[in-house]
Structure formats: structure tokens, C-alpha cells
Image 1 (spheres, protein in one colour):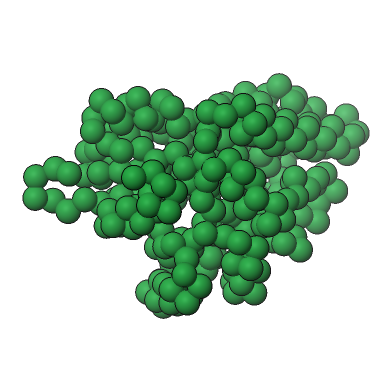
Image 2 (cartoon, rainbow, N blue to C red; image 1 turned 180 degrees about the vertical axis):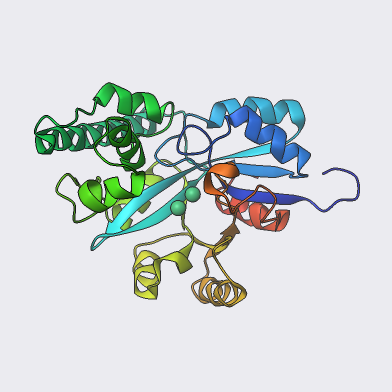
Length: 282
Ligand SMILES: [Zn+2]
Ligand SMILES: [Zn+2]
């Protein structure tokens, strides 16, 4: 804790290892400058940024909570589940993430092949270029869309989604589909706690009840896309079900996603304390 400032935390942050703009080191530096006592690194399908953030955190006195954000699927809707304090160094956990990434690569390659088939010679998207655009992050549809724009297939990223790789598009291939129960089980097997991310964004509390029934440990109550009503509602739901409550900015690094900045959500340290107690980390 620094000076007389209250200890605050942000438990939902992305780095370049998913779709964020900051390296783990940059993120920790900014967190320190913004006055955070602790932050969680929660990249999509990746635990690669955690160790680097922890090393930097030790230097600057910022506690780094190991986390991840996984996608589950319920009847075509993506439901995100955060995993905290997973044993990110264990070979079984590493292997799981390698498999998820490989699936993403195969999916992107399938979309590229389909796009080139549909092109009939009018353009040629290179899979190498798609991987290059993705950089250290997980390959996804936005990278395929950008490569298609560059190849001259469409004029804009949104046109790429509308015509080809949107859910109903001819070059769309589905993501790896895991149920919430499967994702929660994965997180538990890895020694972690599972928290449903930004529940208000699904617009369907039926999904939230389903995830609670599937054995989730907590609810992300504070998120930039949650208004006060949503906060009150999910706080009550968590209390009723004796679940942990968490919150975070879901910051991807500022400009890229425009609206959200580090510091937008400042959660009192007591919530992290409760999480740690449940994870037996203190
Ligand atoms: Zn999410
Ligand atoms: Zn996120």
C-alpha cells in the first residue's frame, strides 16, 4: 500500500498476448503510475504474459494476480469465464492453452482457404500475413479481415465480416466450443477459481443462471459495460448464491478499443483479499 491512498485493484486486463496493446511490462508500469496495488492479467486463451508481468510487478511493488479469460459457448452465444490463480506453470495447463491456440490457427487457416476459393482468382489472402498481423496475440477473425482488406478482396474490415466471415458468412468457421461446465472444470482442475465475466453484456440472465448452476465461483460485478442497476443486480445475485464478486476495466490498452482506460474501475483490495482466501493464497 502506498501512503494514505486506499489500496485498489483491477482484476481484468489484457496484454499483447491476446488482443491488448501493452506488453505485460508496460501494463504493470502503467498500473503503478495509475495507483494500483494489484492487477490481474487475464488474456484470452493465454497465460504467456503472466510471468513477465510478475517479474515487473516485483520490481515496482505491484501485486500481479495470475488469470486468464476463456470462452464458453451456449447455443451460439459466447460466454466469457475468467480463471484466477490457475497453476499457469503446470505442463497440463500449458498443454491445454497450446491446444486452444492450435485450434484458433486451424480455424483461421480454414477461413483463409475458403476466402481464396471464393475469390476465383480475384484476390489471394496469405495465411502467413494473417499470422503476422496477429503478432503475439491469438489469431482471430479481425486479423483475417485485415488481410482480406490488404489483398483487395473488400474495402473495409466491416465489409469482410458482412460478406464473408460474419456468423452467417460463407467463409465462417465456428470457434472451439466448450460448455461453461467444461471451462469451469478446466479452471478448477488447474487449481483456479472461475468467475463469469461481464454478465450484463449477454443480455440474457438465463445464461448467467446456467453458469452459476455449472459451478462458477464468482461474478464479475464491476465492468465498464455495467450500469449501476446491473451492479446492484449482480451483487445481489452473488450474495444470494454465496459467490465471490470481482471487477475490472477489461482494458485492452486505450486507443484500440477507445472507451476503456486503466483506472476506470478501481476495486477496493478487500475483494481481492476474499478471492485470495478462497484460492488459499493467503
Ligand atoms: Zn470478455
Ligand atoms: Zn476481457
